[in-house]
Image 1: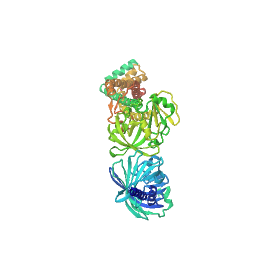
Image 2: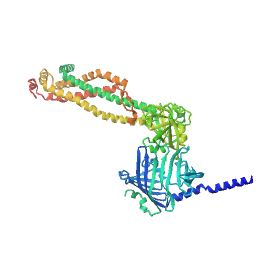
Image 3: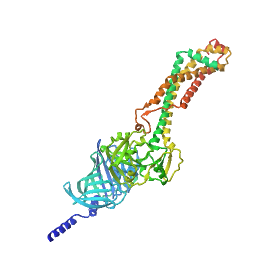
Image 4: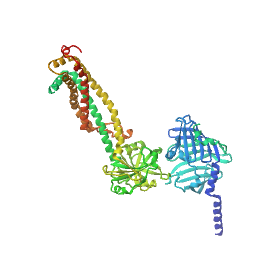
Length: 244
Length: 391
């Protein structure tokens, strides 16, 4: 009896030791994903009901408050620029030669017909600030050991009341994420792959976003090149740069 | 005067086929103008009746931030139902509605819609809200036929609805299509679903709130109240009135062309008559007629075309227009195609003022057209006319 009790205590201790604190995991993920600044080129492949569209862009971002994106192709989108400063977003369209501020409900519209909304791109609050998190288990995803984290909103003004994130237990990179409605219905799922070691951090180069209520194979977001912590001229993050 | 009318009539009948051709052409103008105007009057009446029965009742109170043409304003357009309306809501003479935006996913397609909450027990509007008074786990909903067509939904179908609550948090649940209604009012049908008010208030975390409050009595004196703007029946139907007015103006161009063609024939006949009947004119003067009396005679002769055309038009026009009024005219398109209240079958309305007004207008125009060439008579030399010399 004494032995059995000792074994149980030992097993529980190992479990407690091997399952780290959810907050620590999220912080480690943040360290991988966020950077002082970054410049990347990407492709967005939208798998719609009527076919596939591919949109290429080049983005510059500083922290999580400032970003500037210029669309390179297709010809129809070429020259379209997007500027995000704090919680404001402007879009410049070369065909109309106008700068439009995207605000209010317009933020809820889809970005160029993709499964992503402007708001999804805008929400820059740290997950640890708006969600309570706990580790609910472990699993193997893409032959990698992952922690499963469940995040429940602790503020009212949040788009998704619940999130579930599968985080690589060695590299601290999310491999899968599910976003849930208040009533518990799965709304969106994103899967990350092509994890690469770039500039001293693990980073997913391919993300597939899928609106789970909609038909279609979702939107693929592929980073073709990425550079971290390089100097970006400050004038780029201004409205004047949109028309240049 | 009597003699002039008698003479004019005899002259007209004596002219034979030419007279009848003029009369037939003019009678077509009569009948077509009355028929077309009757459609617009019928449409105006039907549109207002349908709007009152299905949507606006005797008028509405709108939340001050509500703008039906700006879906982005809906997020803010809601507030607590004023306590002074409690009695009206209790006795069924007022119906509150809450409006929000949402998305449905019929067969995986994404469709942005308006979610409208209404009391299932209301009797003020013709919406069959009794279908909403059902106890099922899904949200019971009613939709119009246009909405059913565009979404591919049928009675008894389930579909996922996604919405955001007052704080912006997503939520989703299944709705059950409990009933499909047929209406001529697209503003209660196209791109929207109706669900129980209380359920929507809970879904959006907006207890006891509404966007629009419809009232029954059109004549009761009402005042604006804080957060709520009074929209009288006249204000709410003004748009359709203006649209019909625009249509009427556009149609007038068509009437004018039609009338000009008919009047051109009358004018032409008059010019020809005066030219060919110079001896007759000279004889009248020789018999003691003054020039003004001869002008009057010819003018009456011309104006008589309009009277005879009215008689001829009534022979085939009355049965034809009565048939249209009772059987209606099928436009072959639904109200959704137009975006405003319009029935698939339009029943024209021919008022006394419409018929009298049109008759007098055509009579006046014909008289003027007849008088115009007759003025030449006053410049004629009677002796030359009597000798039949061309002047």
